[in-house]
Length: 343
Image (tube, rainbow, N blue to C red):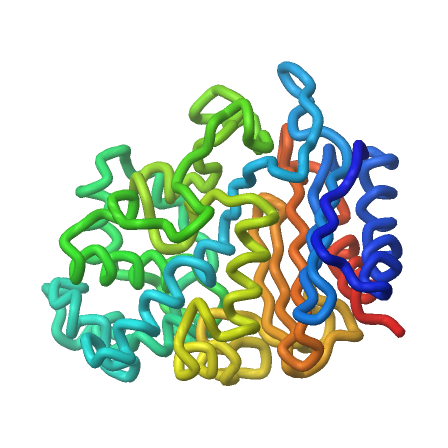
């Protein structure tokens, strides 16, 4: 750890930050994760960002910085896709309770009675569909147009509602269809991008099918094969993630209606796009019930507590150089969240 960035922090925030940073520092010291960046913003007391450990270990070692770019993975769902879908609903371009076929009429087009044709935008936002949790779409080919056709025409096995990337892949298809652009041709938002300079990015995994350590290119296999998707692919820094969170806290980055929907429960664990507090959730035990959050597979996370006017992001490279290792990321996230909110 080489330093921190403190911007107009109040008297209490440095104390809160120091205790919240300790679990991250300990995880790095124990070799559980290579490195990470913690950032906290408080509407009354400013923000603090601090880094620990290494941005890369293999094949060369690079130090972590407060401005290191991270593959945000599933934070793409809440920073990029969700606000765009909600904005389209607000203008009347889509109806959240209408089926996806209102925009994607070719979804399971050879079977009018297919259950996939009844799935709505709102159900996808809240992961209330029968789509499977995991599907290795990338193993079916490398042509992104054919893979899109595969996703749209596949007879998906139906199960109980679970968190599924397919929901947001389809929402991303809807954004593409309505805009006439691919995801990667769209504006990613202030401070974000769909790739990053390898020398400024935290390394992720040594990919077994791309045969290299990934730096600045998307880790998610399906997003890589689709060449952009609604469930993953966004890159950002701790500052850009906190800027987005602060924009939700003060209402400057989205409408009151959209922010309200992001906070409106759709199930015991989900809102429109986001996760909400429940037993064992990533934000810890002490956040208020007015908190929303989300995590990313690469080791990222963002939590926003509207009652306290506070948000925090923990960005790590916990899958570098491999995901097949117990990084303890779940316990780390909860420990940081509890220390952000205790006392």
